[in-house]
Amino acid sequence: MRKILVVGAGQAGLQLALGLQSQGYEVTLMSNRTADEIRNGRVMSTQCMFHTALQYERDLQINFWESQTPRVEGLGVSVADPSLAPDSPEVRGRVIDWVGKLDNYAQSVDQRVKMAGWMETFAQRGGQLVIHGAAVSDLDFFARKYDLVLVSAGKGELVSMFERDASRSPFDTPMRSLAVSYVHGLERRPEHPDFDAVRFNIVPGAGELFMIPGYTLTGPCDILFWEGIPGGPLDVFEGIKDPNEHLAKTLELMERYTPWEYARATKVELTDARATLSGRYPPTVRKPIGTLPSGGLVLGVADVVVANDPITGQGSNSASKCAAAYLASIVEHGDKLFDADWMQATFDRYWDTAQHVTKWTNALLTPPPEHILNLIGAAGQIPPVAERFVNGFDDPSDFENYLYDPAKTEAWIGEAAAKAGA
Image (cartoon, rainbow, N blue to C red; front, side):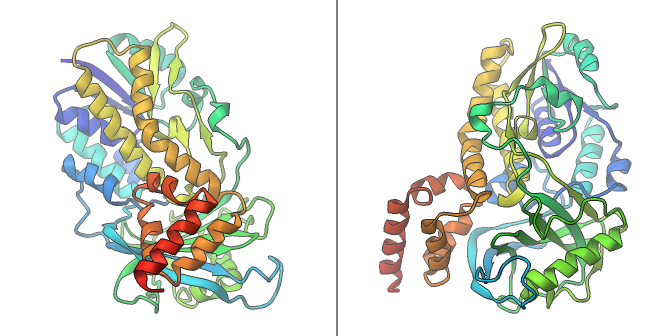
């Protein structure tokens, strides 16, 4: 029986560990926190997982919260009046506001719920769980005992083993400051009261506000998520430690910059005392193979090797897709040596998907060109344009067909308009 060590208990690490376990591998999972510490800790992320990523969980029969979690059936885009300067005191209206329906529903489960539950499931199924914050020296020791070591811990010392890939990392500083609040009490969007949707609000020159229906420790909830351009009027959360002050600032910004969303948030309250998060990081692609002091090799997983900004909501989706690609590659490899060539080929298999996420995400971190603005505007008038755009959140490779080239964008809008009789 082949022995595999997975370091890191996030979406990718746990999904991969459970998948390998189901295939009969002897798996050790290393986490720096227990399940109870995760469950009782601070929120770790925003997330909205679309159909492809959710199906990988279903295939492994680990979609334990699917029946309790709100079904996100659409994704809507609103754009605040760009004629107003970011510091303008005037009440902002919307120049664009539409919603497109997803072909298959999406869902968002608080990672405290999911990771704690999956970790307990892994242990109950006979997996070896080690609670230890691993350092490079630890892996140097453990690597001799395992056929393969997978590093899925996306922060800390272990990431330093993986060299930044400058050719795939155009930014070397954070492009957004991030501020998250999980809340109860948000009223439904009056434009579509009969179904849930993620709302993507763009404030030109300042940043973005995302509203994500989800499920947390205390049941259904909503996630309020500001992404602020560094140094701009939304970049104001650094140093705020008190969760209630964090929420108050979130709402204050909503009232000023997205009053249509604030109108349904006047009665919200935090889901729990640890329901806020803030920070920032530079989007980075790293080379997938890390070399230990002894010369042993380890393979990076998900955020360790491809860490995109969350502006496109792809983090947990990419982690799930990475875990699925790595699982298939490991199983197909049989009893052969997990050498550097195999590691690179395994990452390349994931990069076939991840490259489209990275390209799309990086494109949204800079001011959009005219043809993309035209597309977003056309989506409000031509439903097929909206539907194709929002379903790209499940399959970002489709953006290659019409989003980046102005001629292709114009052709697609014209084709969709003709079909829709617009």
